[in-house]
Length: 253
Image 1 (cartoon, rainbow, N blue to C red):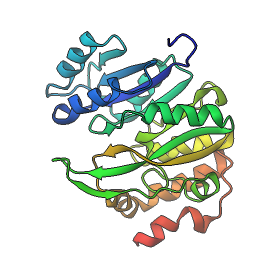
Image 2 (cartoon, rainbow, N blue to C red):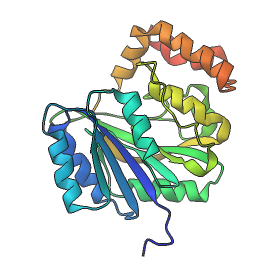
Image 3 (tube, helix red, strand yellow):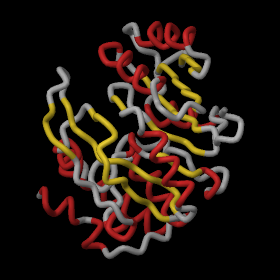
């Protein structure tokens, strides 16, 4: 049944996520689109995260569970995950989140029907530790609106996106290991020259973070934010006006 369907690689970085990891993995193995591989790397957790990963991997052969021999951090772990993917489409996931069962199917269908779109995200319901709803996203749906300020958590939730790898050169999808701030936004900017970006208008994901946290990061790291904008102009041919890119920062000042 899956022979003629494209493989979707779901990458899952894990670190000390034992409280929510089982719910996360359950939501992935229950996806209505079945031709997936779930590649998870535990970044040297000191809780039971890796034990949980291995337990799920024994029950479902689509899961590949690995373990870093020491703590490498998010960027290196994400790069390791990407290198191990086999699919033409790559979906991101956070170890504390939950995806609705049709998330992968709907995003894949959208990308296959829109061959000029390099990445598609989804709307999120924001939840706290006890699964209480604390907000909902209202991310822009269309490329021209996302392009104005392509920031993680502001115009798109990176943990919800699926990327059409067929539209990208081999080494574009790589995280900056020299930076600890705005690593998702940096990769997001790299994608823009290779196709449009979109968000589905459906709520397909529960994200365990308060949306105001992203604006707090902007306030705390103005110098890194400015460096990101300079880099986006110099390396990624980003052409949106200065004021548009900095609009979220100005609103939180």
